[in-house]
Image (cartoon, rainbow, N blue to C red; front, top):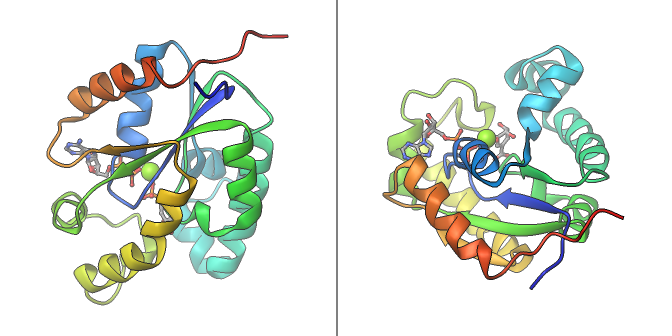
Length: 179
Ligand SMILES: Nc1ncnc2c1ncn2[C@@H]1O[C@H](COP(=O)(O)OP(=O)(O)O)[C@@H](O)[C@H]1O
Ligand SMILES: O=C(O)C1=C[C@@H](OP(=O)(O)O)[C@@H](O)[C@H](O)C1
Ligand SMILES: [Mg+2]
């Protein structure tokens, strides 16, 4: 049993962190924070606009500041962006106060889900399959090393994935009582 005060979802773009996280938070009666959405609310700019104006380094700096703030809280399901785990300080914040679930998904499934997506700047140009494969090779081991639990989300509808994940969490994650 890991007594972390938050549940954190990590994994690649299109794994369902945002969609499954929202559903899971409802099922668990917890607050839901999607880091990309929270960043958009905080800045008043979309993720693609932040990338356009400040580049990926600007986005990562804002993402790190947001994660540091969000992880001070408790009783939240936190959906991270796929690249959040690259920063060691983020990893420390996420694992320090979160039970971390790695939502695993195949590149084929990512491609299906993100075929028409326009909101992910890292996939905006070039060959999507090649990019997703390169990111999976780089980040897959980082997700796995950080995670308390790996959950295979391939081929599952959002509601089914949330239900099954909740069932697995029941025996593994126990939130501490509020002080
Ligand atoms: N389990 C699923 N089954 C079908 N479609 C899904 C599933 N999970 C996510 N999607 C769809 O894939 C896209 C990306 O999902 P999203 O939750 O934003 O992933 P992430 O936050 O991990 O990038 C969305 O259009 C979403 O509706
Ligand atoms: O993988 C990444 O580096 C990114 C993933 C996105 O979030 P999702 O994983 O929710 O798509 C978003 O944070 C940004 O476009 C960068
Ligand atoms: Mg997301």
